[in-house]
Structures are given as C-alpha cells and as structure tokens.
Amino acid sequence: MHALHSTAQVAVIGAGAMGAGIAQVAAQAGHPVKLYDNRPGAAAQAVAGIDRQLQRLVEKGKLQPADREAISARLQPVDAIEALADAHLVIEAIVENLQIKQALLRQLESLCAPACILASNTSSLSITSLAAGLQRPQQVVGMHFFNPAPLMALVEVVSGLATAPEVAATLYETAKAWGKQPVHARSTPGFIVNRVARPFYAESLRLLQEGAADCATLDALLRDAGGFRMGAFELTDLIGHDVNYAVTCSVFDAFHGDFRFQPSLVQKELVDAGRLGRKSGQGFYCYADGAERPQALALHSQAKVDGCVVEGQLGVMQPLITRLRDRGLSVTERAGTGLIRVGEATLALSDGRMASQRAREDGLRNLVLVDLALDYQAASRIAISWSADTTGEALDQAVALLRQAGLNVSGLTDLPGLVVLRTVAMLANEAADAVLQGVASAGDIDLAMCAGVNYPQGPLAWAEQMGVGYTLRVLENLQRSYGESRYRPSLMLRRSVAQGARLHD
Ligand code: NAI
Image (tube, rainbow, N blue to C red; front, side, top):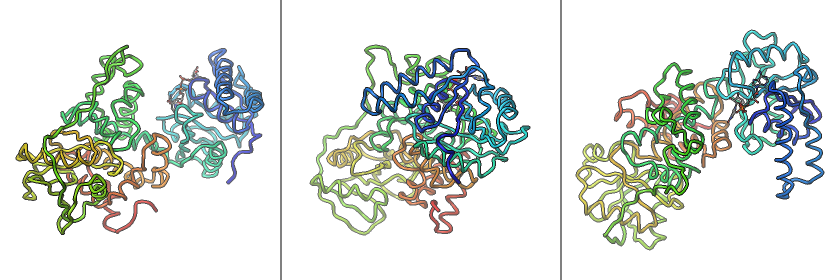
C-alpha cells in the first residue's frame, strides 16, 4: 500500500491546539492543506500561528526561508465546510463529543468523494461508534496524534470494526511519509498509549496513598533508577490532574469498571480542590514564585564496608557486581540463590513480596530488598525496604554498600514490589493483555510507549530483559499481597512462560 501522494489535498477540521499542529505537519510534508473551524476567524488565526512557528524554525536555522514560504503558501484557511469537497484525506480534530463528531462525519460523507479517507484525531472515542450509521464506515479511521503534533513522533492508526484494511494501510504509510512513527491499533478503550500508560500513574498514586514515601522521593526513583523522563507526580502536574483523571475515568468506565484501571482517590481529591497542577499553581507540588521543590529523601550510613559476598545469580541485578567492583569493593562469588551478603545484612532483588514476608517464608535474617533499575551501572538512586527484624546495624551495612557504589539510597516502608519494579511489571502486564486481546502487536506497543510517552524501554522488551517468568512471579506476589484483581497477571505472560515463547513475535 502506498502513502497518499504529497500533492493530494488534505483537509483539517478544528483549528485548536491539535488541528493546527496536524495542519502544519501535513503542509510540511508537501500537501496542500485546507483548515476549517466553525468558530469564525479561528482557522485564519491558527494559520497565522503556524506561520509564527515556522518563522521561529527559520530563526533557529532549522528551516530555510524559501521552505517556510512554500509551506505557508500550502496552508489555506477556509470559512465554509463546502470548500473541503476536493479533499483526499480529512482529519477532524474538533471537540471530543461523539454526537458532534458523528454529525460532522455524516456531513463530510455527503460532501467528499467516496474514496476520501475520513480520519479522526479522537483520543477516547470508539472509531467503531464514530463510523456507525454512516454509508461508508470503511473509510473512517483513527489518526491519533500526540501533543504537540509537530514534535511528537507517534501516530496511532486506529481501525474500527468496519475500517477497510487498505484505508488503515494507506494512512499508516502516509503518516510515515510525514516523518511520523505510525503504529496500528484496534479501536479499544485508550487505544495503545492511553491504556498501557495507566499503571505508570496508578502505581505511584497507590504508593503515595499507602505511605511508601513522599512525592519527591517516588518521582526521583522513577527518574534516577527507572530511567523515565519524569516521575508520575511531576508528570501529572504538567498534564493537569483534570485531564489525566478524566482519561483514567474514561478508560475505567469503558472497561466496565475493571479494577486494573480504577481511578485514584488521591488524584480525585486534587481535582475536587482545584489543585490541577502547574496550570493552577498547585498540584502535588507548589508552583508559586519562590516555592521550594521538596528534595527526595536519602538514607545515610555510618558504616564502612570493604565488599560483599554474592551467592548465585542476581538476575537482572547482576550488573551491580561490576559497579561494586568498579568502585573498588571486593566481591566474592559463590553458589547460592541470588543473595548479597554484607556484614549482618542480606540483600536481594525484590520479587514482589514484602521484605518481612519474604524473610519469614525464606528464613532470611536482616533482609534488605533492592528495587529494579533500568541500568544498575548508570542509575544514580535505588530504593530499598527491609524486614521488621532487620537490625539498625545490618541496615547501616546494606546502605553503606550501595552508597559506596555511588547510589543514593531511598528507604521505603515495607510494601510489595517497591517502586520501579511494580510499575514496570504492571506496565508489562497491561501491554501483554493488549497483545492478547489483539489491540496491537508487541512490537507496535513497545514502539508506541517509547515514541508517544518517551519510556526508556518498551514494557514488553523490559519484561523480556527481566525474564518473563520473573515478571509473572512479581505480579503473582503482588496479587497475593493485595488480594485484588488489579494485579492479576495476563494470560499472555502465563502462556509465554508455559510455552517458553518470547512476547515479541
Ligand atoms: P481544542 O478545543 O483546542 O480545539 C477544538 C477546535 O474545534 C476549536 O477551535 C473549536 O472551535 C473547533 N470545533 C468544535 N466543534 C466544531 C465543529 N463542529 N466543526 C468545526 N470546528 C469545530 O481541542 P484540541 O485539544 O485541539 O483537541 C481536538 C481533538 O483532538 C479532540 O478530539 C481531542 O480528544 C483530540 N486530542 C487532543 C489532544 C490534546 O493533548 N489536546 C491529544 C490528542 C488528541
């Protein structure tokens, strides 16, 4: 299947933040673009705004002045919808309302040629529902850009029940020709990104609610150990709690109240209080002039250690050994079950059980659990928790070892799965379920999470790196601790383990 030719007329409806960005992308790719908005003057205003954006690119040396003129000449604001009759592709980015979008699509169907592709930038409405009742539902497809459209690479190409495969394929190739990273998705609640990303917010909100640590510490752990660009609290403050909470509620409702997507009371309280984040000056953090940003908490230690004994393989935490040696600590390796012994303390990578539970079940004294890190050689911070019987002296020795390896050490209350581990396990679980349900391929889901929300690694590739069996065990332990269906492992993970098959095809 080929992309639409760059001379094909494109029409964008809705000249708000998204419509203007999409019009700019299409014009930059060489298409003549008509922009229409039912608010008089809005389309012309948006074109003037795009012009200013292009001028800024010229000033930064990223665009030639002649190209800027050519792009601007291709952008035409129109004030009557009838002017869009010659379009080969219409992308609507109007208000997020099913009835209004359906009425617009009906109008377009009678106006445009039968072969015209009718694309919707909706982020939450079903493409199947949008197309229902139309004469040519096969022409309707989702083209979900991310904000800001000129900068964000990802485009989810969303097929409803009736969408013709050729239409989705043409749109996919067209998005690619526009310099975007398209992925295919089936029309299901949240498509890929807005579904698979839910646990990123949900697990931090839950950890906060259960008193694991404060916002600044939890955010720092996702950044400095997890390799995410931002922690969940600073990110939701940026997105706006009204917007983020509404997306969670819409996905939760669309899944008929599946507990996996249950909205957080902590976030609801912020919305109720009008603490919407940066835009209102207060969210989890305060943005008033001169307000001090709270610092992440870190443990200190009076102890000094020379090295440790590693018993058996540490799994995904194995690279920590190199880091310890690089810092001049002696590491003696011997057979065992994946433990680090230092002084009185025993350290182990979390497996999703609470430290006190694991200490009792496995007969380990002075147990200190270590969280997952994206890269144990590069991480600058790590979370630990410890069993109730761990002595102050043993804890001091464990902290000293990690600090001498150059890590800031943040202590959590004794909760299952720590921070990065439970977040990544839950992201992988959601991604696996989306694969199982045919929403998208494993490759496209990983691509979408990296290109759409800047994850440092696709959740499924991450699960494979950790070991799918280990990821499954973490989830089973979380479910055992909480007794909630929220943590139920996806059949996809169980099947992958049972068959010894990879998650990526
Ligand atoms: P916006 O409110 O900034 O712009 C919507 C524009 O559509 C307004 O200029 C409005 O006058 C116009 N409009 C409303 N009804 C119309 C109609 N019947 N005919 C013609 N024009 C009409 O909204 P925004 O943020 O640009 O969102 C637009 C769409 O994109 C929504 O479906 C939204 O869910 C989706 N989206 C939004 C993202 C975001 O981050 N804002 C990200 C991805 C998708």
